[in-house]
Length: 96
Image 1 (spheres, rainbow, N blue to C red):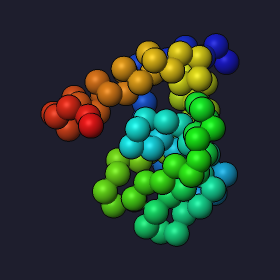
Image 2: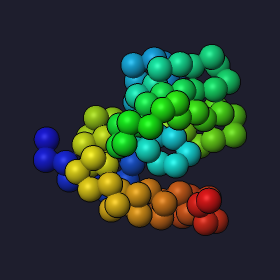
Image 3: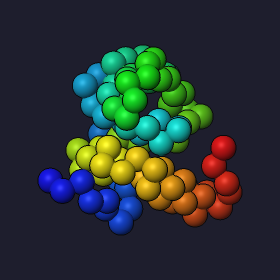
Image 4: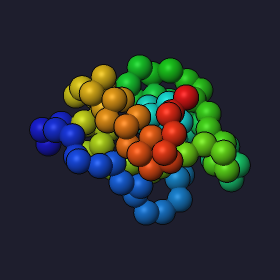
């Protein structure tokens, strides 16, 4: 794996369970440690911050592939810019 970024980050199929990797509402790839059906918790794979929490109903979390994680870790600033632009294009509003 080269760590080159894919053109678009795609939500992977299936529920997010402990051990899976998801993208939180700050675009961090996060290793899931808890899912109670309403809230996800985990550890950032960028800077190891924890707990990182997201509400499944109100946050736009997506399940990530390993390729996405590698791309984010290879060039975090570029990944963040790309994901912010994708979010803004999808929802037609600036990310907060």
